[in-house]
Length: 269
Image (cartoon, rainbow, N blue to C red; front, side, top):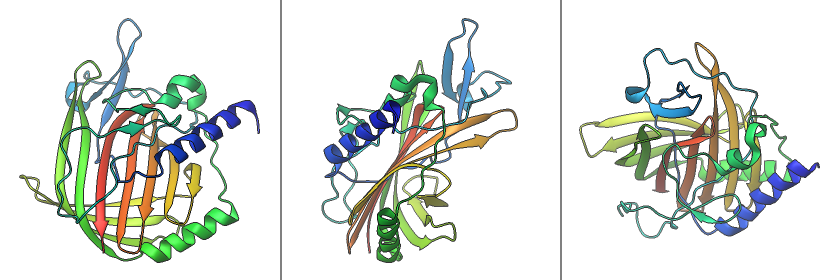
């Protein structure tokens, strides 16, 4: 293992032991983020409404690295509990308390620079594979609870957060690609009404980091998303904790190395 790999491994394990007591779940919620350079060569990020006309996505190198997996307060009580509107503490890979602001660079991107975009997908070892198989058997069921989504809007100069609350019904299934399939149906409190989506987590072709124990899994997935012109790097950081009656998953999404969205779902059988 070279020096770079050792640093990444140590950072990931330090985060693991500092955040093992916290839980929840996050997703991209179909956020569209654009990246471009201004006349001075500075890179900017924004949602579609704030992007310049005819902006062309920046071509990326091949991709990889790990970063901060955000964490929130442990699930206590029933899924009828509302999520607090205020920000909860989060943690970076070095175990330091932090908070995520829209379009902030990930800590790994800050420390690794261009190496952040190098992809090295891992092979799952026998022990981790057995834990994943046990997880499939444990949570393959129908669940219900509540969902909280945080979506980044505006620009990097004037970022805004949009919070969406909903009830959630989730069917969990094992997919043919050895990933876990989450079929999520949400009922929003506002004019959005009912919406559905499917998430596949712990994909063999995307994993770059994983730590698994009997009641939790922490993982990082990275892949390049092809566009009409160029491509962009998506990073998904996953923290899943489960028991016989409760399931809580935490996912944070980065695009091209910057934070764009989160979603939290807390469930019971």
